[in-house]
Image (cartoon, rainbow, N blue to C red; front, side, top):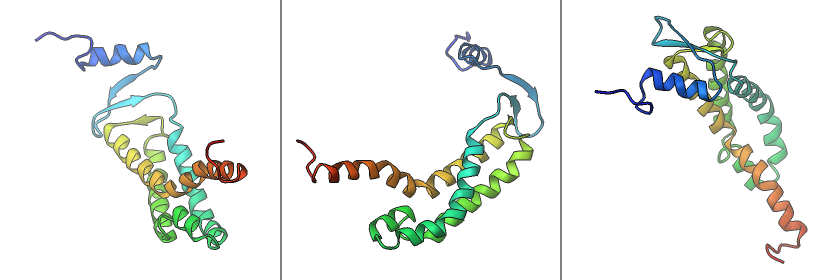
Length: 152
């Protein structure tokens, strides 16, 4: 059995990451696989901040959107603001617990990467309605500004 550059062997993975400009240092961690030391990952910090914003802002946002049932339903996952708070809170707890274990999201194992992926998924689900409103609001405003016509 020969090892080719694209077969997924450790040397080919190391070569691909070095070509991408990433520096990867592996060491035996004893906690679920090899430990990868790299630059600080920013997405867990962004997810953590977004979770705090969702927890603090959901009450105020539901008060603002209560007058428009369609937007309220979108922002609060079908009119369930408690569900948004539970998802954001669960993600926040996981991220807070993982920050010291991963040394500020700079070191991770396959297990911690999986847990962080679950936390990120919870955050995305919690803010999905807000993202829909943010993306579609400019399109709706553009249509209204054109008098309701899509094509001139």
